[in-house]
Image (tube, rainbow, N blue to C red; front, side):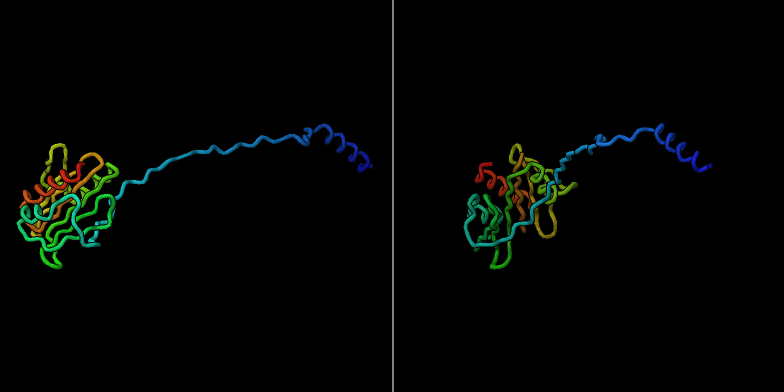
Length: 177
């Protein structure tokens, strides 16, 4: 008899409970889309390498010979575009002077100059409007300057910075940058 009373009682309790909704959409939370843009830090392009014999398009060989104080028997160019790096040789295998030119991103131009003439180097500000530095060592001198999105780095086997500076000025004049 207890069982007979229990079953109807369970039915009544079930009917009194919370109704279960059928076919009612359950709200879902959409994950918010977050768009992040990350700009990669500018990186210095690899050092140019001599690739082909040629004539420097922005710097006369005779000027380099006179300014650097050495005969120039050979000139090679890198494959960089639009301005190849120019390698002026003292002998068949020894480079006496290199001129690297970069035009593109202002941040990269500054990085190139800072890498060539890091903090602690002597300040360089010639030609007018250009800024950077120069460093002398036992093997020669590096004169590196930038202006806006352009950088010019002159590396000479001579120790006098005035020689590298004169060559940088002439290269910038020839490049018209």
